Image 1 (cartoon, rainbow, N blue to C red):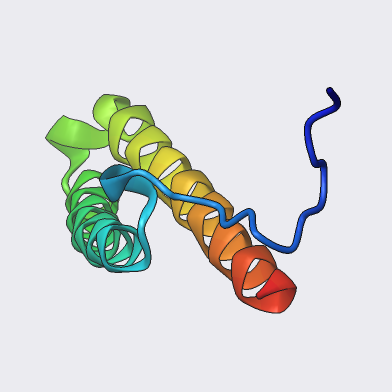
Image 2: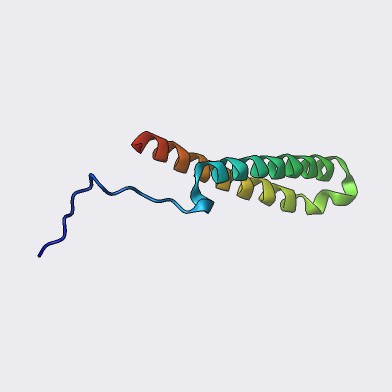
Length: 82
């Protein structure tokens, strides 16, 4: 006997860590990290003693912005498909 492959009764169950509230909380915390990295970029750019360490807050800002963009795209595609 064949299984019914009708998508009418199937609902996608998302895990808690991929739910909308968890994604919004992660976007908020990544925004805080992005502000922290911006402060680090400002300090490293203005203080001559910390000029050689400018790469670290720049990489922190790039990585947090990248993850934030990926999560925003995930939320947009999820809401568009629903």
